[in-house]
Every structure is written in C-alpha cells, then in structure tokens.
Image 1 (cartoon, helix red, strand yellow):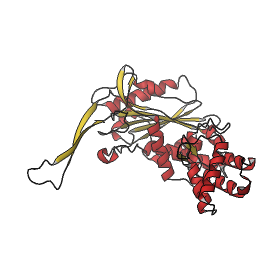
Image 2 (spheres, helix red, strand yellow):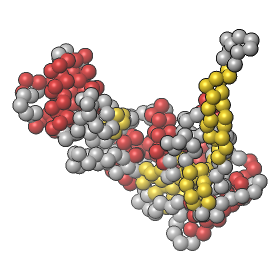
Image 3 (cartoon, helix red, strand yellow):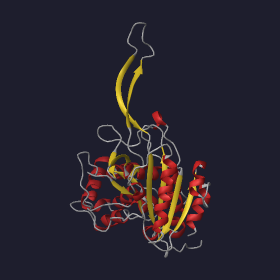
Image 4 (tube, helix red, strand yellow):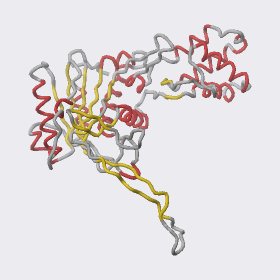
Length: 365
C-alpha cells in the first residue's frame, strides 16, 4: 500500500453546520438542554463527550478490517476472572483473589464490588491477555505477583491495533507510560443562533381507562430546542500513525481509521431522546481544512446569527473566516461537502455532494 505523506499537511480540521429539529441531544443535571454563553449570547451546547461517544460507537458498529475497538469499563477484573473460570477451568474464589492481586499490583484501585474504581479504556484483549498470564503462572501467585504477570498485563494495555484508543486517547495516571495521547479531538458544539429552549409538557394515556376515569397520568415536563450547531473536530495524522505503530500494517490501518473517523463525524448523532425527536439530520455543510495546524472556525459565530436564513448566513460567515485564515496560514486547503442545495449559491465554488468523494479528496492531501 502507498504510504500517505502527512509531513506538510499533518492536521485535518473538520467543520460542520448542522440544523436539528426539536430535540434534546444533550442535557444537564436539571434535564434541560446544555447551554453556554458565547459572544455575550446564550447558546445551546452539545458536549464534546456526547459528540465523541456518538462517533466512537458508530465507528465500532461499522468496524474496519484489521482494527480492534476498545472497552471503557470498570469491569476488567470481572471479565478477567470470568475467563479464568470458563476458559481455564480455575475455581471462582481463587480466580477472583488472584485477579484482584494482579490489578492491585498494577496500582488500579478497586471499588466495593472488586472492579476498578474508575473506568479504564483499553483493548478488548486486555482481560484475555491478563487471564492467560495469570493461568500460566497460577501456582506462583501467593504473597506476591510474579513480575512476568504484571509485565504481560501492562503490555496488554498498549494500543496495538485498537483504533478508537489511538484516536481518542486515554488518561491512566496510575500506570506510568500508559497514557495515550489521542490523535483526534472533538469540540463542544454550540448553536450559531441564540438559544431558544422550550418546555414540553407531556403525559401518558391509560388505554384501559374506564369511562369517567382520568385517562392521563405520569405527567411531566421536558425541554426541547432546535439549534443550528457549529461542530468541529481534528485529526493529527502523525500522532495516529505513532499510536498505531505496533499494528500489523500501521499505514493501512491509519488510513482506514482516518476515513472512518471523517465518515462518522459527518453521519453520527447523539442518541439521546431520538425515539421522541428523530433528530437524525446530516450536516448541511462540512469543510475539511488540511494544513500545518488545527484551526477552529468558532470565531465566525461570536456574533450570533439571526433572521430567517440562519444556515445561509452561517455558511457565508464560516467561509469568510476560513478564507481570511488562508492569508495568515500558508498552504491550507479546504475541501467541502454540501447536503443542502440551498447553500450552493453561498458556497459558489467546487464542492462535493457525495461523502466518498469528499473523503477521497481529503485523504489524498
């Protein structure tokens, strides 16, 4: 496979303008839409965590060839113990005790149920490799854990071919050297227009209520909003190749991971309240900025967009801001994808309407 030269354009920044129908994509502890004050105006916000999870889950469901997908869980000790019992025939009490010793040796604190106190993001091979190491040295685990077992468990925490771990990274302060600097970043999305959050009073109806009985019950109130969001994310293509360097074919896997990340940045939507909102839109405009540094276009919306043509005005503002940045940062290129014919006059230039063509054009740079 041809190696992609990422020396001169190591970063891809993705920008999207996306309109949503009445929905509640991301809520706070009061069950209201998350908000942020930007440019002196309250905006709707969708957290970076919600955006990352939507992309990561979609990438996992549409798995690429040669890639593994990580688990973020507190249950790795339980998963390891279960493998010792089911795969190696070890007694449950001893398996649980020896597993607990190994995880303690790794400095991963336990909770009351014997799992880790905090979720760990790791390869799905981590429990299998740890269980195999424990089984191979079963009789030597006594007052202490043999160093070979600890070393094998630590090695299983490496990225190898775990695509989403390479992209999104991991903080693991308990084990020196096991932090992973992610190759991708996802911003907090915010509305380009002022926030408008409406209460949604709801109730359920008793289908078997008798005549004269109160049919409505379970009354409550939710909140909905219909924002036009500015979303952004970036890819550090050099970091991605560094993170995947231990894979069988690092370059092939890195290229496939890039393509998958770009595709699901465009297609993935947070799942919250989807059954009551169907907020399953595509971005009206996606721009990939390829260059020597990450470049957010958020400054285009410090002044909120108002009026009846919000998408057109937002697209014009974003294009103007990115165009002006070309005068400051040399050798940037912008590749565009539009799903909204109403923006053709605003874009007024070469753009793609097919996602595969768009990804191809970004990938060859």
